[in-house]
Amino acid sequence: MTSTEAQDDTAARSTVRPTRQRRAVAAALAGLDDFRSAQEIHDLISQQGGSVGLATVYRTLAALAEAGEVDMLRNEDGEAVWRSCSDAHHHHLVCRTCGATVEVEGPAVERWTSAIAREHGYADLSHTLEIFGTCPRCV
Amino acid sequence: MTSTEAQDDTAARSTVRPTRQRRAVAAALAGLDDFRSAQEIHDLISQQGGSVGLATVYRTLAALAEAGEVDMLRNEDGEAVWRSCSDAHHHHLVCRTCGATVEVEGPAVERWTSAIAREHGYADLSHTLEIFGTCPRCV
DNA sequence: TGGCAGTTGAGAATCATTGTCAAATCATCT
DNA sequence: AGATGATTTGACAATGATTCTCAACTGCCA
Image (cartoon, rainbow over all chains, first blue to last red; front, side):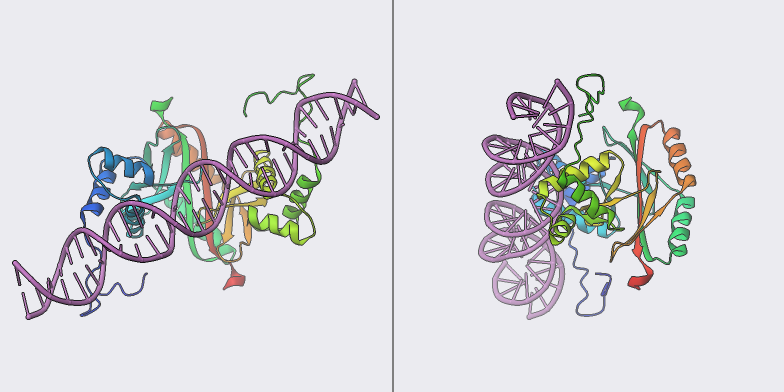
């Protein structure tokens, strides 16, 4: 990836086709505002009468994450969970119990991580920052 | 767990026995300064002539992590990796290639996360913050 | 020195995630 | 409409990490 994002002549053809399945996954995500596992999203689609293979759900989620349309993070059990998100770089405040999520931004943190990394000569940075807690509704 | 952490009269006996296996794991960790997977630690012990079951390595690492003597985090592949650590709360700057790690502290970040969480009414907080990059030695 | 709670290990069992590959779909060209 | 080649899908196998099971083993203290 990251190479021929092309749209030349031949090899062009954006490749990513908006199929029924992909739309189903996107729709399921759109109807949620908390992080869910691939299994849960798969089940959700089934419950709503849809039918999409689990493997396809994984593939679609991976593609969406790659495209920056959804965020993927690992809950405290190490399981991958997804959620649709805004474009800008941000982090999350996630309820450990119900999954309710708040997107938060921390420019200062971004600056801090860059500074620390630079200070130690690390390049090609990335970072993870998630806050877990119990939301007000879960007492 | 989380129940009878007791230390009364009878049931007392700190329970955790320093066995050959546990010492081997601790020793292996002591000889490292970067994050390693349970498998790697297991292999390392074997290479040094020791013999400890993989399940035991997992159990010991979990116990050490619980006791706060080692840090456990998930690398970008979602695999759990461990490393001996200092007592104080801190975060890590980890080389994506060789695993070289720098412990870093960020009082400001701690304050920020608390403030954000409080602001949204979240309680019983915890957070993860890891910085990944390529260390100077790995270009 | 015995007895027992705490431990261990080998292998089975889970479980999330990814790979395989033939069948189904699509977009486009005739 | 019909042919055609590329993409996508899905059922299922394959991986791989982590946990569970349970009989055998071992520190420890009386």
